[in-house]
Amino acid sequence: MFNRRDIVVTGLGAALGLAPTAHAQPAWPEKPVKILVFFPAGGASDVLTRLLAEKLTSYFNQTFTIENKTGAGGNIGMVAVMNSPADGYTLGSATIGTLSINQFLYSKLGYDPAKDFVPVSTFWENCNVFAVSADHPAKTLEEFKTWAKAQPKGVTFSSSGVGTTPHLAGEMFGLKSGIKVVHVPFRGSANTEVIAGTIDFAIDNLASYSSLLRAGRARALAVTSADRWPTFPQVPTMAEAGMPDFVITSWGALVMPAATPPAITAKLSKAIQEILSQPAMKERFLQAGARAISASPADTAAFAATERLKWKEVVRLSGAKLD
Image 1 (cartoon, rainbow, N blue to C red):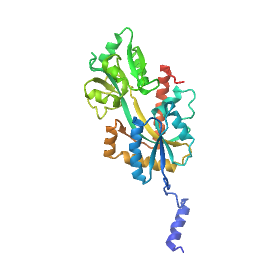
Image 2 (cartoon, rainbow, N blue to C red):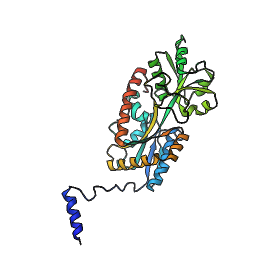
Image 3 (cartoon, one colour):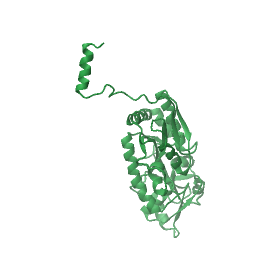
């Protein structure tokens, strides 16, 4: 039985065109949620996704599990997410590669990063470091450029493989500086070759060089982040070192199949932003070699699109291909 107040409130809602459930949150998640990680266990993407999954489990009082689905630079995992039900129970831990670079490296990708997924939020980023041997004569980036231009055969740089951000960063340095650079790919990090001086430089993941830098076995000439990196505040940015417009960060974002209800992506994005705003989580991410970041679904999509524009041109100029 309705009383007068019920009738007034209901009538006002109808007059305003509001459905009774207009402000209701989706019940999701009502069962365990699976997050596919596209790279092997123990890598940066895997470690950071597990840190976030642990907190999401507590936040929602529902299990968030990790499944490593690797291969083809992350493309296999992306296709698996694309083909999963759009019900919010399968997520993908995407990266700069799978969302903004791979489409320019592979002739057959198997998915459209802009159309086949809805981004939830970015959640981590790390930067590269321009590293040389501790015995190298250059103490600054400008000194290195002067030294490199005097080498008749050019200079060598290493990476963990064609199409990786260390590879493309090295190519970008050569293009912007006018210095002849020769790419020497390795399986995994080649930091031992750099510190020995058999490879002239690398613009590699900072986490791979952190211990070497602290031990004085390698020298950091610059970092590729927009601002100085929190764990190495004494190292200048590329812009400060004399090379503007050279911001390169690796990053990760959670994605869902494109048809996932917006209410679910919004609810998860809000949770991620709250979790990663906590000082303790920021510190845990820094200890793992990354910075905790977050963004709305719309801002995440716009960021990935901007990154595509940048890397499309770098890949084109480098000539890098993976098939």
